[in-house]
Length: 257
Image 1 (spheres, rainbow, N blue to C red):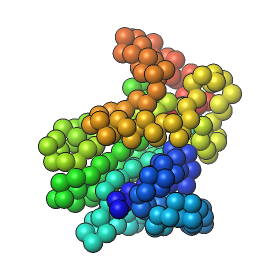
Image 2: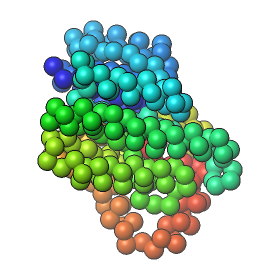
Image 3: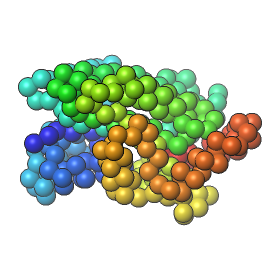
């Protein structure tokens, strides 16, 4: 039986990955900061699907948290076959309105943790000749969106480059780029979502099903919905200056996952 490790596992997209993978019979390593929520989630998934669900409390904005997950990914006796780097958050406010400490914490979680955990997982996967990594980014990676968008753009570029370098190794790497998803993400960041049209919201469970199918197909980037694929097509032909004006006005209120 294979094992998947999911960061940010207790809510939103991470929880949807956990539900889907448990239902498919994968054992899980669940990573998040809230140990009580982790234990409740692990018990529920074990009881419902009969899989083993390991709990690993870790704060990925701190070196010791990243190191703890690195160590688990490097455990050769209990190997991880699929890594889902989902942990992330948003900061409310535009450039210079957000405290520098919060901006640096975002880069720690979105970039440093993704780099270190992907590398820890991919090393063992390459030795075994199989495995997969899903790095959760955002469609915000493709538009000017301050530190959040820049960090997610890094995730996409890093994942595509790593996927190219790992080609032929049996290890698949993919950046997942969702749009607005009904999760706790915006509430935790204190972002208003009242102005977002209903058609722009995605269902986390359907998103995960599409993402896993795209990973199986060998895609290095997944935009898991036709609506957002169309929007990204428009973004490619829209002048960057115009995009910057739109995103600067909306960035204080809300942003894609």
